[in-house]
Length: 234
Image (cartoon, rainbow, N blue to C red; front, side):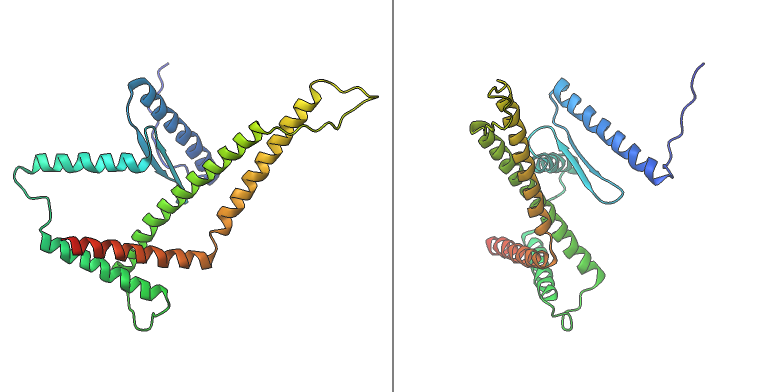
């Protein structure tokens, strides 16, 4: 008997919805990897959960590199389809746009420092400032995760190069030949787990409120400097 088409709709039960999301997400990432291996394709996937958690996959290089390739390809198609239209901004207009960005970032910097009585930012300005901070926070998290992965890999390599043998199980003067190897493996695993917990504690400690404000200020300084350099080069 033929089965009818199942209508797709939102899962109402939040528990079932989360389980469905995890299963479908894993299947999507698996299919993307298979497509990359079988067809030698570059696949990039970005998924935001209902709670705003980010999941991404880049089968070739990094996600930033794939996004840059996408931007370049999109710009090339826009130029081809334009048929004589000028997609590049006029230098004067570009200077004006960059100057507006500088003013916005300077205003946001004063706003973050607590000078809210004299600095009044409307909703559009706050939304634009929020987008800048979200982009910077994403880049910061990506760099942090890469550094953590490198530190974990270094600890694994160090544990393999310098195994620790603990001879704690002796019975009547006889020791099993595989006892030291088993204990060594358990010890190395414990060392790696402890190192992983330490690295996770570093991540949580870096998310404190005071450090968050300092990072915001540093980001705004960097953005202002970059925009000023761009304006001076025009």
